[in-house]
Image 1 (cartoon, helix red, strand yellow):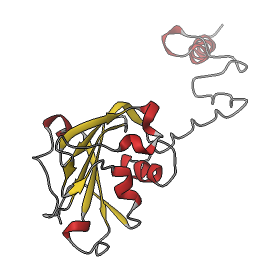
Image 2 (image 1 turned 30 degrees about the vertical axis):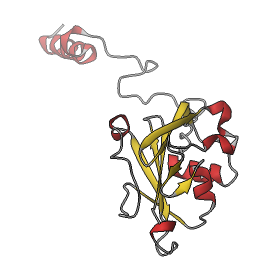
Image 3 (image 1 turned 180 degrees about the horizontal axis):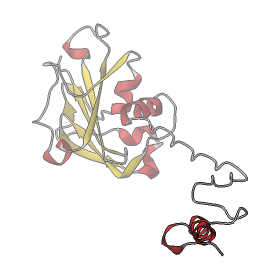
Length: 191
């Protein structure tokens, strides 16, 4: 056999086996560049979580006849930022259970019991804010320390919906990280 033929055969063999002595893939075997087969069905997208209403909206909805808002095992009740009682989930649907009183039997010139539910029921036009801004509201001190780190929504009368200090109010609603109601502090204007 002539040398040229031997070189041609050797070159052909080298091209067929590729570099490094590997054999060329057969036509029926998929290569790395082949596209994978399409799945038989598309995976269903995960449902989006339903939005959790904020504690302010859920409490006002409750006052107006809706379901009891999400709450911890008990909700502390305050008048003028002074602890005066608690309400539990088992009693929460009973609206009078939200009424409370100070040790002296009155608050902001009003006789007890006083309820944040009743205060909000008496006012149809409400706004939501993050802090109390009225100088009319009587308090026994600042917000208690355990409540200062919680999420807070304050329900207040809509602008120009009350006649003066005697009609002013703020219902402070405190919630934990899960959106559960933890405490309610009712502030009333002194008349």
